[in-house]
Length: 296
Image (cartoon, rainbow, N blue to C red; front, side, top):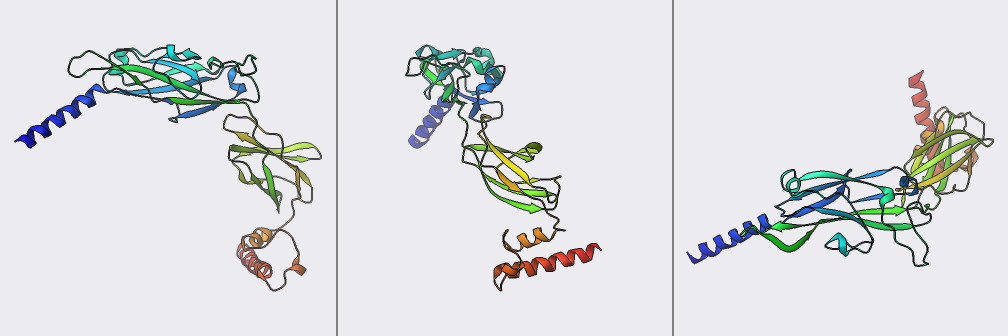
């Protein structure tokens, strides 16, 4: 009997704790915990924050932006802040979810250590901000407001105006009326913009993730200049990588079969010898002739 009473007491305490606690999460519209913004966003971009809540709150949810990595218990306790519209107690307890918006230009920059004035739009800066929130829970037994402040799980904003390092053009493969370009970027690179020029005039450009990028619609036996630019999560673009060149050639599909079979990009038939490259050429030639025979 004593064991049953103890177990029942534990269950009641657990239930009371579950109903007393309030949990609030602050996330961005895409469901992530962080978002990156750049100087170009300072003009008119608005960031959407999604809040979700569980438990019973006894007061409104205060939400604010602060510089740095720490959220205090209240907005008044923060040195630099920008307060957003609060979520009412009724909405918090009944709706359980909603959104708030703010302009990127509202980020509360503080003055840097050199005493100058910093604001949204300044260049060559990488700075963190937090979306913070706090409320209080209703006591399960008394119905009174808890004396303990419940802090929301915050969201992180990274203001980034530093351009990433230029990517590297590692290789250029000659194809029929096309070039396959291998571009490598550093860890902070989200996308690469590849530009193909002919005698200084842009003929093609595309933005894709780092890796293999194929430039189509080119002329054979014409040399093209290739430039690559890295783009980070905030949209900052690097200077150009070292320019490379490539000349499409009439391959009739043989070159691609040769490469797939392990052949290298340099060296002709006289360089094949009896090793791997020679075997690759013979293998690729067999595939190529077989496919050509089937098509004819």
